[in-house]
Length: 438
Image (cartoon, rainbow, N blue to C red; front, side, top):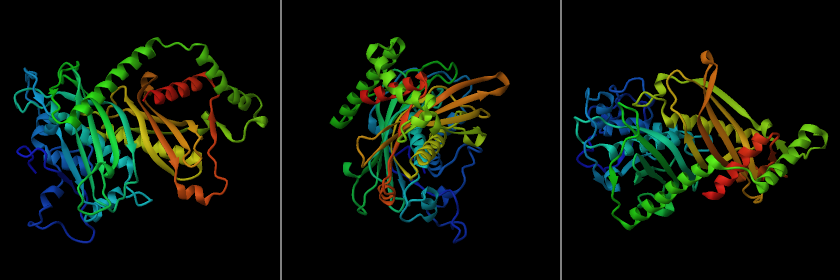
């Protein structure tokens, strides 16, 4: 599939397994070429979406994998429009049985973890398209996920109905890029995508590094054309300025009298749990008693085209742990609402010992019909031989519980989470304050 002449042609996602009900596709099968295994990128992370994207952008990715030796950097920045990076991918769930089974969860909806992988892969492709200068003699930039600003699920995503993801660059700074992705699913077959059909929205921030020096590198400029593109650019600019202000405030933030009182209030019930557990509130639980953890060694099959562990893989693993944490805490199947924020603080490499630790950070119970369970997942890269451990990622998820689960359990109630230490209380307050600033 060559999209260089028609860059906005939709990319169709197909299953990565042959059908169990028949033999291999025939020579005349229009999908046969797309179903062949990709041999140019052996051993790296593969999913139906990454396969489709790599097939569609093979010329760009070949340059990334085999860059010209001693190639000079891009000499002159280009000005591009959002439409030049806009990319659409299609999931034909209604007709591709194997693809449908690869994405089905136990509730006949799309697996959110796999979708997160796809969103990161698509955002990465879009950032490469924007930064490419179409000159095969210059060295391409190293583009990495810096953060996920927000991912919001607006309605359930069925695995039986075709799905479409549309994404484009909406803002650029000197060396950073914001990509907005929207997942569309219509209940009416053949209808055009509209704002009412948006099932999920996501904003990814990528940063550019010189592939030789590893220093921040300038990216191509962006010139929004339509009124909607200009509005998105202004909103992203405002978010970027807010992030810079918040970083400055964090560096010099001190807890004043009001903050001290909030800390004291949060810690009051936790101290009763620790000092007089028989008298503790039975509708509350200590934060430390909600913790879950898993560990893994990062394998070569999980790496991206730059040789680092694929950000979407980390998102997927963090989501699965957060979901399990919410499930064990609530006692009922949770329902994902949003990813509040993700920070990619340092790269994760092949062979790294990765530990994912989660907890219920706090709950919001003012709306009994939709209690909120806020989960924190922290990823640590540990090096036992060096006796060191560093935080590589922080993830913040929000869940509620499914209505049918609440209906099936009379007297269903979500417990309040209380900290036992000042450090836990500070983490809760910082996250609450971050949410009120969004």
